[in-house]
Length: 210
Image (cartoon, rainbow, N blue to C red; front, side, top):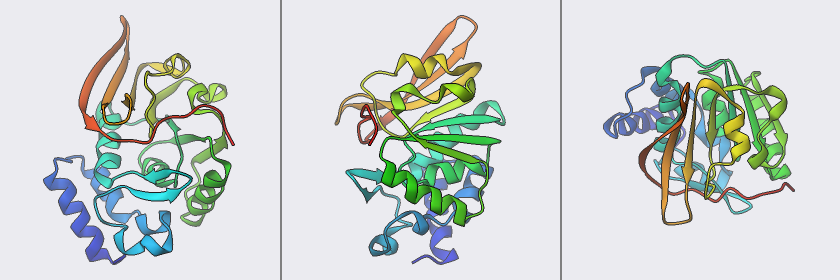
């Protein structure tokens, strides 16, 4: 279930679902998603579905990972990207092969430790991570060309908007469980412009860290 053919079937499904960015599809093909899930779930690693990773968290559905990544790259190459919610490390691994530098924040220390080991095992050296409250971002490295949230706040934290570069874009699921939508926010000369992409379902963005 971790064979090249299995990955190719997944990428075919992503194309059928509307993913068009060739570079994103190439990275989805070569990134070993089975490395980012528990061994017991390895047979489902290339299903287009979210899977549990412990601590009440999930690894996102491949379509959503590809879609959010594709949207971030629509304005061209990104030098610095902030990810809120490292989780398994899969989204960071995908991004790291398409952007200059990924800064990833995770509130659960045990998840971050696992993700760091996986990222290093894949020889991806442009990902920096820390355990921190995602609502606060990572101010020391701001501003960012793009910010991606892999957990859903009820509203976009103002601190994250403040860390977005002029001309940059932030993509995030927003809303309470069962009523979430994917928002794209662009930092324009006249302010922040928001558009709704589609309905989604993510775990909530919680405060604090542990």
